[in-house]
Length: 359
Image 1 (spheres, helix red, strand yellow):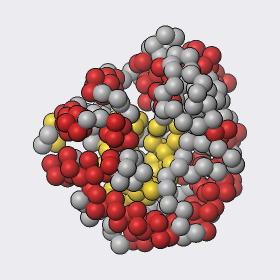
Image 2 (tube, rainbow, N blue to C red; image 1 turned 90 degrees about the vertical axis):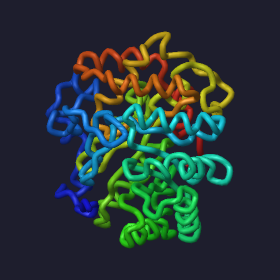
Image 3 (cartoon, rainbow, N blue to C red; image 1 turned 180 degrees about the horizontal axis):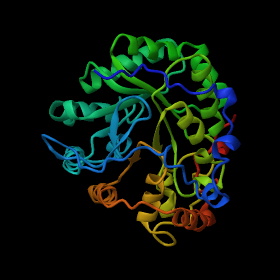
């Protein structure tokens, strides 16, 4: 069993400065969010395999001791698929080399996504899969209830990665600690029912910085953080610029979500919710930027995995194909992609960012 409790030997968060951290980079590299080679997540050069076939390349999940495939399957979209396509999607993911599976207690009525994992993924592939689920609980009792439900829904005694879901603000970050949610997570980990813990959010990078600060100051090991990472993020209220350096310094694994802005990079309404639900976005992909540029930019950052949603099996295959043929971008290529994408940046494309909720 790997040791997931080791604390990285890193400076106090209070002493971490973006200016210091990035000061050694050229202005061109900073603009392109290009990272020093010693800080990039290591990449597998030799394909790994298990009894079900060849895996996609893997990367370390921070300093947890665990490695994950660089593409993960987004479980939220299962609730929109016919039941027979759910099973086909899991089979396609496994045969395509994916071994990281994302879901959440809130995905679908009566935890539908988790129950579909329990029906189609766990019975055949539990021993080769890293399974992540999440809870939006804001108090002790709800967190414990969700945890028990998640294990029951999926039919597994141990959850690989359990995350506090949708941290919306600095106030919310503190509330999850004050109301005992974090204590439930730590107890589950201490009892061996959870291997790793993390948190997610897509509204405000300031909430992420506050949660990271609280974990660091209280000396509690954290294995993962999940956030929006995409080609338009550097140009608007950026998680990439503000959160990644701090998470990297702490040795926390980075999980990329909203890599296509909930579908809005393709134009139209995408995931239709929030303040801008009725304002369509202008298409960036593929009208202005190729799909592969958008995916390869995300993988060029020091992330552990890119969690991809899909509306049908063809889209899932497209994501697998992109992972198999991933290019290593130069600083100039990164910069060109960011400058091209900037014309579509802002609160309509990234509809989930902080003007969608009261602070």
